[in-house]
Length: 42
Length: 329
Image (tube, rainbow over all chains, first blue to last red; front, side, top):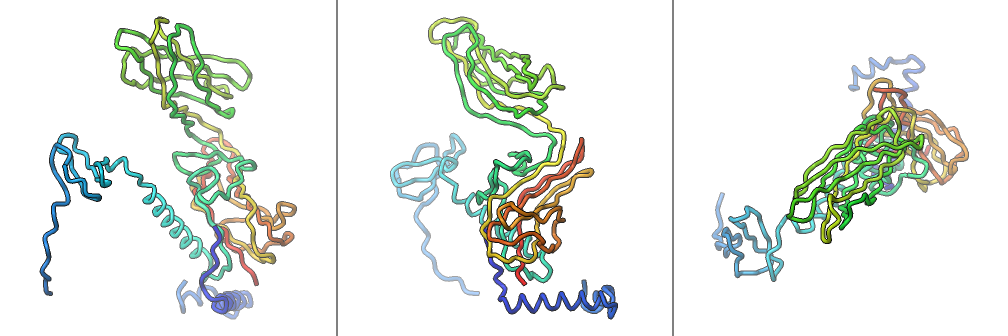
């Protein structure tokens, strides 16, 4: 059974940019994963 | 709060020992003699347990799919997937018929409604068979055992006349090495009684079992019956897989993720391989619940191999369903 994500494509792309931004910040050691989790929760 | 006036309805449920004369469709009758409930179809009362309840199973299945879809979606970070493909392993080819049983090597366990890489299970054959008027064995049933280790088996046996008579049921174990051995049980009752059979050589794998019956005498009208055969087997765990049929997908998927409700023990684990070009190239050995880049050739013909890995006793892996997520950048 195939199900398309009901979330609008624009919202999905926004979420992916947030995920990529978090990864970039952690990779460049601008911020640690722990600091992110302390601010916004895990 | 106010309570509106209501009209007390006419009698809807009859509680009595005799069938009500009122056959109005939908009325209910509780039979005080048998403690069973009946519903009228407009002309007669039908036992509720005999009414087709498939629609409840259909609604339950729909709910199970919705639970699975929610679980799979929540395994994706921020639900940022594009397409999802799901199936539940309520039978060997899946509730949505997406399992390629020809290329699947894992064992289907009908008790758990799951695929597994080994361990204990049963092969069941409920069919009732009979023999008539014979004092020599007549074969009535063959049960395929797929070269598995078999320990014991049970069935139900009875004879069909009221005069004292004995029916004997014989299990012949045909081993993979083409030797055979037997165990027999007898019954004298006219109602079914459970019988237990023991494989004399449990160290040998069994190809199939042939069940035969005979009667004590060959007089006319003498009959023997058997049904509900259950063969208990065990399989030493090994690396086996569940493969999907070709799933038609939009070309160009960049990433994938797989969810399975699974149970593992010892060194057992579940991984997966994915192909988007009908099995020509593969991205392999991927972990569950993690987004992976697809490095093999893209396309529209997706096949997933779910690997149930674990070798030797105690190293088991079992899955009850799957949910594949595809991502397009």
